[in-house]
Image 1 (tube, rainbow, N blue to C red):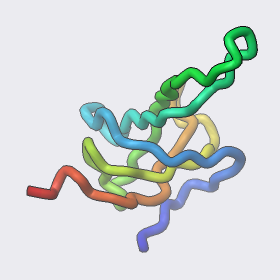
Image 2 (cartoon, helix red, strand yellow):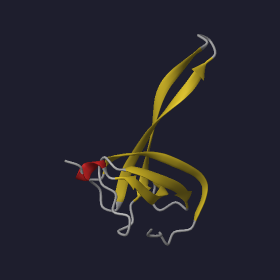
Image 3 (spheres, rainbow, N blue to C red):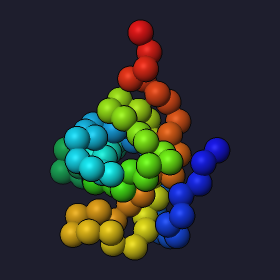
Length: 92
């Protein structure tokens, strides 16, 4: 398994890469369920963040990845791809 050189801290998420068009950046999205007390039901929501995609990871669209929080890399990037779990883009 390849390692990234950035130090990580804090939160960890598992999600799907939605976009990998920007240089060394991927957009990762995952679903979550939120309880709405007024209606006593659950509501499905999505979270979407930008993450640094180091050359050694090279995550593509459709991949399932694990991202971890790190120091701010840019205005919007505060996460880094730590591991690529499934490569759905290469199937078929």
